[in-house]
Image 1 (cartoon, rainbow, N blue to C red):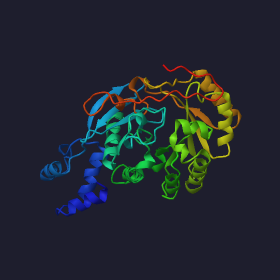
Image 2 (image 1 turned 90 degrees about the vertical axis):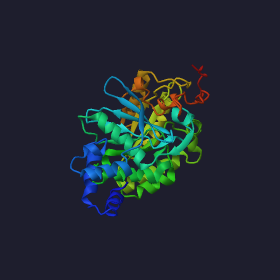
Image 3 (image 1 turned 135 degrees about the horizontal axis):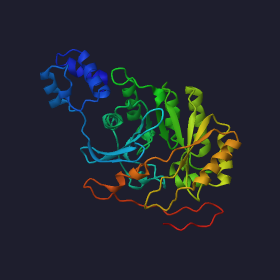
Image 4 (image 1 turned 45 degrees about the vertical axis):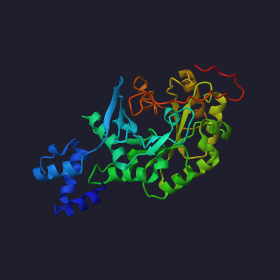
Length: 359
């Protein structure tokens, strides 16, 4: 429920509106798992709430932890749809990577989520349950940052994702700053332009991953609808409307898009656009014929960008022990706890390079 909905629900039962703030503070700030913990509510109200408005519906079907504090959970909802959530430790405090859909429609060829197909979009409460799991897992630290970069395309679930962000920004829940929220997209141009007009200063991250339409269309089919030039024009509009620089995510796949020529093309492509490049070494998926790039190749790629004056960082490789890349945990299980069907793509052959043998 939105805060106002909860106030209306209480009002319809002759209860004061201030009880809504108490309930929401217990849920989002004090991370209560049940109404029994909400000791400043009358016992009768707690019993009524437990009967009529249960807190959450998901079960944590699987949880893993890696060195360095990375934790991942697979949440399963009553219809047996599932979503992954990853808690990521950083020196500035923890962040959480949240899923917006069960599966994904985009079909990116390097992604385990897309290989298992699309089931449905998640609701606001279902995304909130992921956040609350991560907030409890982060204790004693406070979780104040989130990225919508998990399973699914956030802008394909536009209304729900924005409602969720507004929910956490509301003073009655967490009062979380929009500037600590990041929404990732493969480049859905109409939704990027719509988001630019919302008046929410959230951070935008574009999954670019290639410098030519030919290669990007091969690994990211959505590029056939919205080619690189159109997507970059939309991100420029986003920056102009919000003042928030865009992050250009670039997944480095060994032997495919990690060469010097690709680095020079990327520099030429983004240097005219206000933003930052985040290089992401591939987190390999066992069934897929793609390799992580060599460390020296990653650093060489970064150095070429810097020579061109492009601000570029390399994302730390976190969570390989916990299948932390998108879809890697969920792909193991279907609703019966059996392996999810994976359709590995054929290996792509970069122009001018010898074919690579699949694993």
